[in-house]
Structures are given as C-alpha cells and as structure tokens.
Image (cartoon, rainbow, N blue to C red; front, side, top):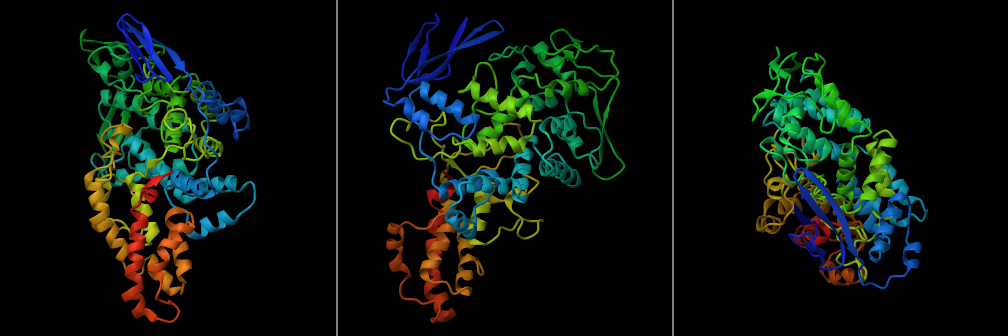
Length: 559
C-alpha cells in the first residue's frame, strides 16, 4: 500500500495512511495497491469572512460560473470583480487570435455603451482569419508538424489540412478520426502525414494517447505504469491496433503512401508472443481479423463514452484561456492527478459531446463566462488562489504571439527566410523556421507531444534581448513604422500619446502617466516644424517612449 498527496501545503499523509491537514484549500489523497488506484478529497475552507450574498450577487453568464462559484463558496474564496473593458478587450484578442486590438478597435469598443458589446466582440473574433491562424498553429504544435521529418510538400499539405479543419470548424471527433484512419498519399491526404511523422507502432501509440487522450503511456512500455492502472500488457495490446500500418515511397518526390497491411503484430517482450489488439479498457479484437484495426481504435477514442477524449480537449482549450488546466498539466490526465474541479471538467466535456464536439462553441462558452471575464486583480481573500479561478491568471505571451504583437505595435513586420514579407509568426507552418527571437522565448521544437516542450520561464537571455537585442530596437527605429504615420497624419502630442497606449495596452494613458510624459513631448509642433525637426527632435523621443511601452510587463503579459 502506498499513499500520496496532490498538495502538501494543504494535507500530508504518512506511510500508515494517516492524513494531517497542513493548510487551507483542497487536496487529493491517493492510495495505490498493486495496479489499483483510488483517491479521496480533503478540504479546509479558508478563514475568510465572506457572506453567502457575495456569491449570490457575483456575476454569472452560464453553467461554468455556477460551478466555479459553488467551489469558491465551499472554500470561502471570494471572486474578483469583472475586468475593465480595456483589460477584457486586450485579453480576449490575445487569447483567441494571438493579436492586439488596434487603436481604432479599442477606441470604438471603449466608446460603445451597448450591453452586448462583449458578446459581439467575441463573435467577431471567432470569425476572423487570425482565429484560424492561431488555432492552426496550436494544433500543429500538438501534432508535431515539422520539417525535421516531413518534406516541404508534405508539411504544406498537412498544415493546410489542419488549417481547413479549423476554418470549417470540423468536429473534433471527426478531425481525430480522419487522422487515426488516414491512408493513401501524404501529398493528397494531409492527415496521412501523422503516420509519416510517427512511423513506429510504439511511437504512434504513445503519441495518440498523449495528443487525443491527454495521458502518458510511456512508462508502460517497459513495465506496469507506476502512477496509473495501465499494465505492460495493456500497452502492447493498444500498440497492436496500429502495428499493421505500413509506409512505402510514392512516385513523386517526397511522397509516402500510408497503407494497412493484413499481417504484422508486436510481441509482448516478456512472453515473446503477440497479444490480441485492444483499446485501453476496450474489447479485444481477434488477431485474424482483416479489418483495418485503426477503425476500431478511432471508434474507441472518439466514442461519447470514452472517459478521456472529450475531457482532454476541454482541458486543453480551458487552459489556453484560463492560464491553468483543470487538470494540470494538460498532458497528464490520470487518476493520481485529479482535476481541481471535477464537476467543471465533466460539465465542459458533456456539453462538448452533446453539441457535436464543436470546438468553437466550447471556446465561445468559456469566453462568455463571467469567470473568464473577471479581473486579474485579486481581492482580499483570493490573493493566493491559482487553482480555483477566483480571478484571471496573468500569463506570459507565448513566443510567437509576443513577436507578432511587437510587429503589430510598431507596424514593422518581421521577415522570415523563404516567406513573404508580412507573414506573422503564427502563420508559419514549420517550427524549424530560423528565428533567434522565437527560439530564445521558448518556441517548442515539436519533438514531443507535451505542452512542457514550450518554455515559459523567463531567462537572462530574454531580458537582454528585449533591452539590447536587434528585434525590438530595429522595429522601433524602422523607417515608415507606426511613428512615421503620426507625422504623416499630422497628429498632436495628445493624439500620439493616446495612440501609442491604445496600440500597446488597449487603453489610454492614465492622468498620472500623461502628466509624467507630457514634458517630453513639448517644444515641437508637428504641424509647423517640418520633417527635419520631426526626424531630429521628436522621433528619437517617441522611439524611447515606444520602446518603454513594448518592453514593459503590461505589454509582455496577458492580464
């Protein structure tokens, strides 16, 4: 018998199974016996004085808020207020499309007094081409689309297939089935490249469970899983569902044909014999069956009754917007890593299945929730909460989003070798495109199906590159960038200042900020002093101001 705790700051358990509370909050106590695993939740409410009225009057938009507020009330954690319009607008643009609102878009939204303006913005973002760019890139990360293992033509075909799937909002179960059962030419059927990327049955097995079920089977390749119920036998029975996939070279350069053979099985190492193919917790298939076993795999993976499939996707999408998965990390769904709010994860998954595995609809429900729209500013009593969504969790911008936002705020696009000028980082189909900035700021190599591959921790190299590197400084100094449009349009100092802040932060400067900056902008009149005065006196000052805005924490983080 073995015991463990999910949160030692809340509860600990000794070798005899005795639990001791060590703090406030909630923890899961796990018990292992042989290959059997179970857990129990223990909790201790925070000593906050929060009235029931606080939760009754808290803003609610849908079932998500009902469930979250129920959990917060049980732990006596107060919710933060609704975010300001400017914070919401910048947040939802970044989380949904990976872009900033333009100064004009921000101005129009802030001036709009209609009660449904947030809903209308959400719906407009879901229909934008940048939404397609963002989620194509996200699923390309998940599926490891990379020129390290794919020819240029194959990579383009796979990327275009993913893009079209996002564009038409293809149901997630259909998207998954088309990948798992893909066959034929990889230059004609983009999904077939999944098997070109992952050639070996064991690799296919581990990637499939990780990507589509959010679980790691890797440990069970050599022995029974130490943290889960899966045995080595389970692993090799699962692997025999894809053991008959075969690849052969096609007639065209870079073409690979994906086929299903009528024979070929993998032996269980310790017995030296093949085992009947079987999905995890599924029904065995006779080895003599001539049917493409991948059809059975796809049936099981995408079945509404599958306890992992819908939850894995719901958890991935939730983490994108809320900063933390209901199960953290998003690639570690297992009984010994239980969700912080199981009722919420089940509700999201059930709603997802009931509505035809509609990813865009799931995203919309999350964005409309009051929980997503809460302020990132904590209130007394929820300052330490990072697990129960009492406030928005501040998060760093991913490398690709940050680079695109730097280009957008300065109106100085980044150039990538082999791609048209103006191509954004989120539009790149290949993770191997050379970019010192993207590498430094944690772009994943797409070598393993794990969100952990993306490095989000700050580093000295990042700080030095932001302050002294070419990327930011070249964009700020670039001719015909955002600063030169101010001269062309003959904007006043007040207009320029507002424009810079709106472009970077989605808001106008506060009175204190405006008062502090005003002296720097005096002594020059754009309407009368001419281009020489602009270049010699005004532009250097504005370059410094723009640099300070786009290297600030407010710019580098989503909040």
